[in-house]
Length: 114
Length: 260
Image: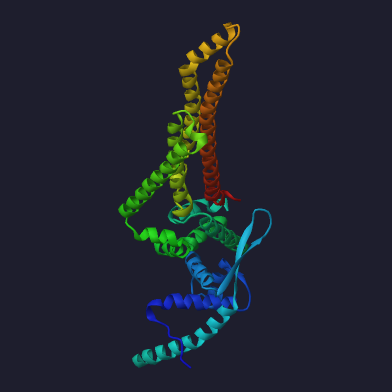
């Protein structure tokens, strides 16, 4: 089976997308919760600027990988939350192998400096 | 959310998108800011520190803003962005000129061939010209508001007042035309009136002629007045429709920043 490739120019974007889809895999979340959870789970290694999150979320929504829904929470209070779609689940599962291959090769090359 | 008004205003100014996409994005960001602020407070941070963190976390650089615009912009706006400003202006002027010629041609044709209008006073022509101008301005405003989606606050209300002016002008022309026609035929009415009043046995032919003349005059002026009122109503309707649209856009632009 052909492994999905991770291209270097889009590395950061692909990384962010995969992290977001992975966090949404189990349950739906609001935008700010995604950034917080990624930071907490990575023990501060992955720091997200919340502002940069929105183009990524909206792009994933446009591609049908996640679904955004509005919820009324009290008078004059509406909040948007995101949930992963079936297409998104398949996509992120397929990305897992790609990332595994990427880091294997990455450390193989980097290992030469040791 | 009012505490984040300044940050939202900065994002709002840079986010060149039409409504309602812009409002939805700002609403989402504002709601997340609010929730994150409350989380920081629960963690024991002061309001001032929490505000500073929110400012840092939610600041958007030009690249992020441009990505959002690219994602949400309509196909038509993207097509227009590819044309230079000069090319856009040339095309817009050409479309307006063609629209004006087509509407004017249709009005002239109706004025000269339709029974109702061909018997009308000559003042029907300026009224129809006013109607043509109103139609062309409506096409132009529709293009800017609905197709090009230029929702910049400072230019939103541009071009609305002319519709009311044209409506008033149409009514004025119709009323003015009525009095001019009356003045032109005043002598003849007086003559007929005097003749029929003072003649002991007026000839049936003369009575009949007088009545026919009066009816023709009524048709002439009423066709003109009805057309004048119609053009005024249509022009006022254009104003009303665009005024509503503009008001909705203005409310959407400002409400998100003032919500609490």
